[in-house]
Length: 491
Image 1 (cartoon, helix red, strand yellow):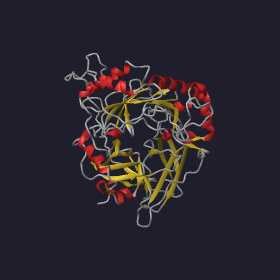
Image 2 (cartoon, one colour):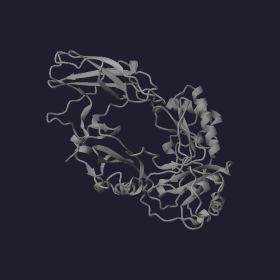
Image 3 (cartoon, rainbow, N blue to C red):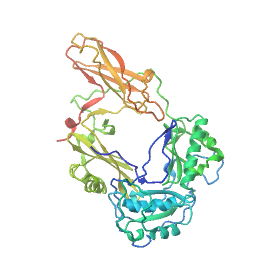
Image 4 (cartoon, helix red, strand yellow):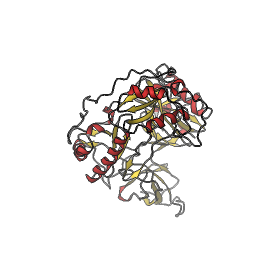
């Protein structure tokens, strides 16, 4: 019932954004007006009717610890994207819901950007400043800022939506009261796009076939995405492979660089994931569980924290979301904190027996909306340990329902992650079977594939589960299931 999440901090609206690519398959990036909600703790103010003021200094190469200086040789340190500073603005908008600017306004600035391909470096909606539109160029920002403020909409402007929105205000956009700013970057968007394609080719030649890459306007970097943590040795190999063709100050890694990656799980490893509840029939509050793909601790349902009693700012995120695009689709009361750490929070409410979510992230101006989701009623299940992938299993309808004398159960096991339509084969772990006086608990898992995979639908794998005693009157149950969601919610 609720749309999928968007970018955590900002929404990119670039004119020629390179889609993330992995295993040679292109992905998607937004290039249209953005809808959603955002909230910051900074006071909102409408942009001045003339050129918006800014206190952003002229961009300079980032030389913070771990950053590779411009022109660094191959083999220098590969920098995590988390260590790269975002291009930011101090202009505060008046769009806390983050719905994005008028399409005619957006068409004006996109047209202007297209006329400056030699210096244009990207365009995005900054949620952390209440929806300020930010453009980046590699030359001095002030001239672009003044030129944009004086620009009037024209019929032949870029049309960001179809059918085109008619022009009803032909004043210069600097008089519209929509907050925008221009900041300075090092690399143009065209340079980032070219470097992204080059990086993918070079890394594939070096044996990193499952790499993803994309141009990130907000960080003014080519972002590399690997299947998992990268060892320091592999990071050095990646840096050397990029060589002089892609300077390392132009690149960052979305993910962790570790001394040695965690050991992989070998096929045939015994599965040990089933845990029985305590004598009172319940699990401890700190039990890691998931519902609809969202992870949290069981205690968040057993003793929920209302969002009004949570850290200041989170209730404002919900208020902006409910008052903005969602309208009457979700309630404005009953929200609680499902999970929270020092940077992110997942807020939830029960709608028609299912959880709807709003995700928040702590930005430079306070808590901001960073995505949303929801689904149908679910069974709360214990989370699998790191390194294992989930499956769904059912009794095989090709066999008669098991009776009291059955010593074998025939099940169909389907991997839940995208696999390109491949069966799990030796990657399937289990079954783990725990038999009690009242139930037979069964669990499976997989060793996940690495890299991007297509999702044509996964084939089921037939498995025969052998029991140590006839089934009798015992129930056959999912060994990871805790209980249906509504049974766990505190009254």
